[in-house]
Amino acid sequence: MAQGRIGWESLVRIEVYVEGGGQGKHLKAKCREGFGEFFKKAGLANHMPRIKACGSRTNALEDFREAVRRAKDDRIPILLVDSEGTVQRNNRPWQHLRSRDGWERPAGVTESQAQLMVQNMESWFLADVSALESFFGTGFRSAAIPRRNNIESIPKDDVFEQLESASRGSNKRAYSKGRHSFDILARIDPEKVIRRSWFAKRLIDTLKRHLIPA
Image (cartoon, rainbow, N blue to C red; front, side):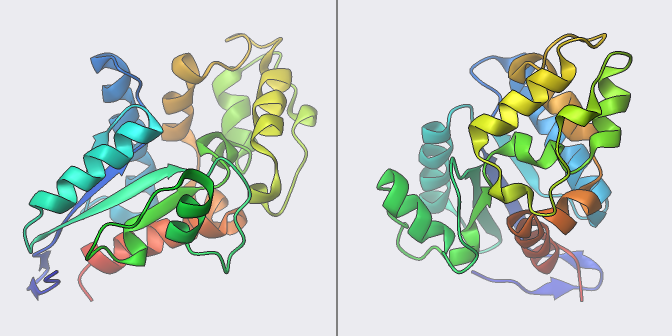
């Protein structure tokens, strides 16, 4: 696909097909807003990708495949889904998605067009405990969230258990994916996430490579 640029404006449009947002319009809008704020704070404020909230993981794949079929040279679709498990750094995303889910890489699609949230989006939240404290307010128990240099090594069930345990006695009550997730995503510091998540860094590096003029 063409990746040329004129002056300071990229000729390439990136479309990120992201898992999240359920089936309702309101939650999908919150999903787009949350990822939008995260990407802006990661250094993409003037070069934003178009975010497509797809709902389920399977729907994200289907929407991505359709986008690949109709993509023009000035558009690059990118799939962004939870890994739902541990991924070794030397394991390529399409390899992981094939072995775990049986998903085949569409013809003509590059390795960088598959991006993973390891092990899920909520894993990113654990990198910024101060943002969680600010969001949940009084009663949030930050001690329930262990400080880990590599948040990708925390099993996804443990991620939810830690968030729920820490927030249960807070002003906003226990963590709820639909009620809280995208508001938290909009608050966390991408730099903290990138330092503790190799695949988050890979995602941001990929977007910057395509969108920000050299």
